[in-house]
Image (cartoon, rainbow, N blue to C red; front, side, top):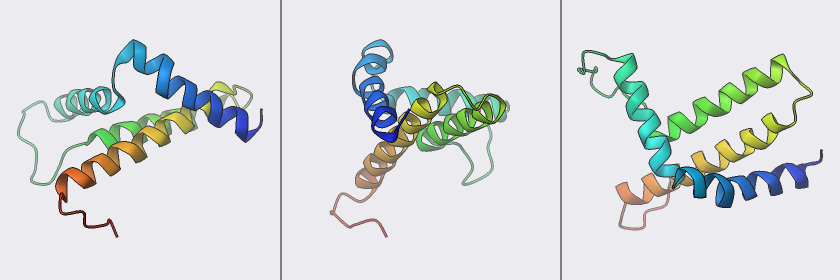
Length: 108
């Protein structure tokens, strides 16, 4: 499997297949982050500045794929999913940045 196939397949999954099944990635990863935050902090009172973001959720799922790849290096689907999670994380991060900086200030 070459990088064109990995990236093209990831794009198909992220932009069509999975979005049709699960909705917009930013919404899905926001739900995942909220559930993980509730699980990790069952009291509901988190320390200041603590909490997983939708970008964190996407990156942590990417790490899941890295761990699975380590166990089964021949499973090519992990590379596709890893690329998809990275793409979603990048897009969600950019969306978050622009919401926090509506003046058009560029991210450093």
